[in-house]
Image (cartoon, rainbow, N blue to C red; front, top):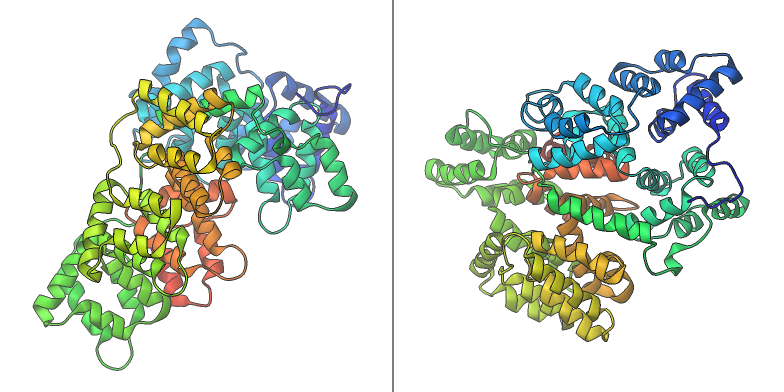
Length: 591
């Protein structure tokens, strides 16, 4: 569905011109090449190749070969052969799961081996039909227990990774692919005008209404309003005309978007994410040697901060606890007191945070969030929403031991109303565990939908009774069925009907249920964007997630914000070398 009527659906000469401009001169616009090649059908690519030849007297494939390199070039060349079958025949239907299961080409090329066979990825993703590949992706998730996107992110890198992700995204949904590209073109400082203009013009005659639906579904904001906020003058008016309307005024999904939302929750519930840390136990670990080295680093005039960082940031938490004990046994000194006396500012916060047990660290972060004049509600929400029952119970015990007061009492003294009740409910560490109960999920979804018509107090209490108690797998199914019951997305309802800390708490639960690494990536981005840094949030997340899922968070950060977490940390902490070095070690690498 386009937004400009009485116009042809596809203009091959415009694509040919865009590709020519992307490759002329020094360097190439890989984003433009990627957009234009991956999102077109075989028939459209054939038209573009012919238009390119007739307009410029040149062979498109030869120009691509001359202007690109490596696996990126090889995949583009395969896509330009336009030889993929248009349908999925019976033999290929049976082959789809075979290519994914242990022993199959795609599984063996990625998850099943050390290193990656890029040629197998190119062969399958570049030569199979759309219908076939959708079946392959579904089968891959069931067999490998990770999505094909997650596998690509972990196995590939650079421009080739971006290209393969674009192919997969276009196979799943071309409108969603362009919704993501439009969002990235406008977020943050400055606007990628070439990308924005190219997509708005070329898709306005094809599927702009579908892109608008996908945009609002993913980003809880209409494309219209984002363009309105990000551009000005005649440029803005032209883009808004191409956009065609403000979906925030509609309030509900278009039918196609509702189906897509339902499918997205289904994929979320099917996919078992393999959590990957960035800090692992050090090999050849010697707690006595580490204890002696730490004492040497703090002894005498001056402190060897680099030596402290290299030991503490590159050991697992269990190893750090051994070092604490050995330090006291060998030297008769309290390592924590020595570190506090020698370090200061953010480096002290980082090193002490790493030396505490996870429960001690969480308890300390909860205390810091509530002490003093103001309350850091976002920190309270983040910790309580993302910890499991065992971790919350350990945190409760650590809090009572350290501060001689229960965490629940502290929360009740510092917060009030529905927000207080939500936090107290989460503090019990009694969330149900286990898989979804289908019959109960349908009933829960209907109760949430009915609650949307009640007054705000009743609505918030009903949401709390379900969102704060049900298991995450169960809630995924509840939120999926909620789309059917209401023709709305649970995130949109929360943002539209609720406010303040209650809204933020429920929104964090939904985001964590949907994709917890993505939630943390967003929290890290907000901690570092703009003027000033929320150092406490940055340190809290980097320390607490480094042995859990920081690698996954890194990948989500890169995917959403088009910049690496490593790069962001370098730019945001450049004036504080010791803290920067520690954070970059925890980050674990550049994406």
